[in-house]
Length: 340
Image (cartoon, rainbow, N blue to C red; front, top):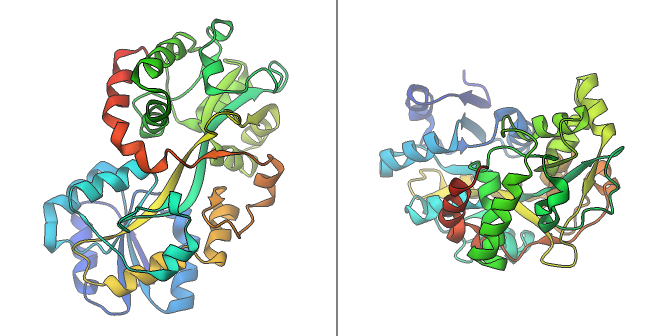
């Protein structure tokens, strides 16, 4: 008998596990760009509440999108879960998504965090922000992303590769607000301030910051929460040694992105797919996102995790969310020309 959730890898296992359940009225098939352990608590709660089994395939975004494109109408996927709005827009442009009519989703999700044509919906908010070493940089020294380009920070900055989607989306937001020329100058100056050749993920940048390899780092806010609750004593010490900042509070706000979901055009279980996405916007699910993944609830009426609230309130750049994909290619070119 199948378990409530099947977590698998691409490519062969997709067909093996999903074929039998593709039209099962009590199931829903999910392609997820997110790691399985991050959404497992949500899936468990959904199945317990609804009785609908979730068959999950986790993998890299490029591989899952390629498989979805290749399979076309034969695809067994019902729901696409992603961690970047540009990925959702990419899937939409490729004709892989179906519009959804749901008063629940329209009511629960603010306009800034959902597609105007109802092709995709934000589920949680993540901030890509600035961190500093507590013993070396006063929190008042840096108030904007633009400050990171100043000559005084030469050799002081840690950040993952510029080509990563997180950084491309951030640069895309700057292009949207400030134009190509200004953003190009900022990227070039930023790359001149790198403490070392970019390597590793966001948590590695914060570890390097705590270890003294740099004085400033750029990372997504939820990684900070993961360090605080890590089983590793070293990672918990990293959390204690660095401070989180909220830049651009007087101009546009701190850069935001979302995790999100969409129903696939080829879905054979559309009703269950919509139920699943609607569940992810309920107060209970939003609380799980915040308590487990340290992301900010998409709903204005749900409080964030207490630790997140302790980091302080901030103004986020909601305006740029829907426009990020429009400037991704330009951002990619700008970054490629730099040393980032």
